Length: 440
Image (cartoon, rainbow, N blue to C red; front, side, top):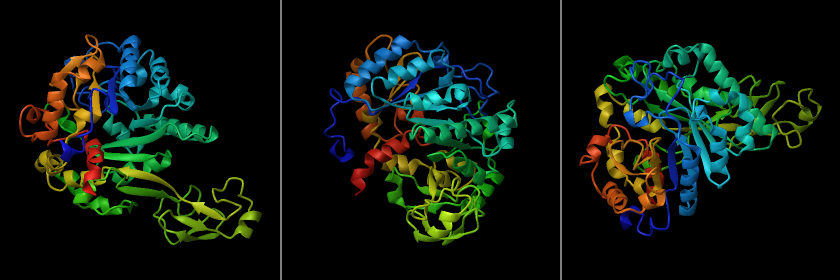
């Protein structure tokens, strides 16, 4: 175990760093590649263990009490359903934040539209917004039955969140835009990245739709889609911060930055250059490329009629370009390197090379109370919080056996061969982050 970096980890004392908690099974959206609510699924959610009402608030509070004693840092509300449809979601948020947890919520955002200010006021740390589109038309394609205006409503809400954060001098909630690439949006790769800038997102996260035969086949990429994506990669206005190499597999930071020329500037939306023009036509010269600092004439700025709305620091005549982090592009490159059939095992070298420490760092609690090892281990049940406390489950012999099995076994062996680790690993980034120290 020492080679994995977990030799000093004691599950009797320390709990998972992050717990993914499913609080709702229902969803009123129609994401075309969703495993549980894709429009073509006859009975939704597809997974029987997710077919029950909202998780009771008292059960969530008991779980939080256990996780607090175990030192868990982060709770992520996610799962088959939309968390903001839980009838007591704001009480759930208060219960989690009152115990000092970092709170992340996976959502399509719109159900929180009328109460978006409370996201900041209650201290929600992050929204992971499942968008899957860069244009109104793309949203209608990736969400059958939804209108293009739905996309505009979501974008408008996220801009409201950004404005309210600024007014309250708060960085929370940070917003990550999750873009799942599929047949219906493969023609708008640049727009998928650009929308992150438009809503002042902290990050844009890319991945490829994980296809289950007979469930979400409609979203499967075709040969022409792979060709288009490969051609569009060089056109993304991104600045690399790390070379694409084997060592980068272990790097948990963003693979790219997307720097933003401010709105209203003539070069808005373009890649930064050595000189940019402000909205009044004054050129600013690049002074520090690593952070994209530009210097403008201070005397001109002092007399400018736009200074009340200009992002340039009037006192110093300096402008620091904002930036959105971009994750998943290198992994996306791997998955689209060939044709459809090659993507099933495109990440196999990464999965084999990176120790799976997920049994030490993460746990998942389904809406039926079942506790799972990771995001994809549907058939591996380690206990149930409606029957036992989470601490009892976490420190059990079965959990210990399974976490060591995950750490030391090839994923081609049972029970992981049924999990499909080589096809798609939702916890890969967490394992990369955990493995990072041993790459130095």
